Length: 70
Image (cartoon, rainbow, N blue to C red; front, top):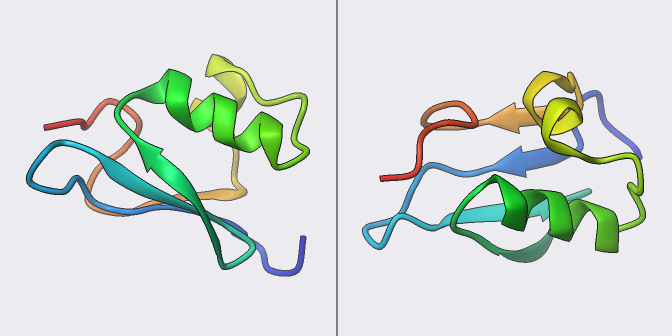
């Protein structure tokens, strides 16, 4: 992964979903942490689990952290 924070979780949209980008590539629309974990695992981050997603310095949470889904 190229940058210090190669994973971006965008602010919640009107429907509560958050866009997920890995290395600048859109990988999906997440509606909860399980979606984020699945997208990251499919992108090759097999170690991604609930704890990893909540604590990783590789993730830039925009518009709120991992508990913001409104």
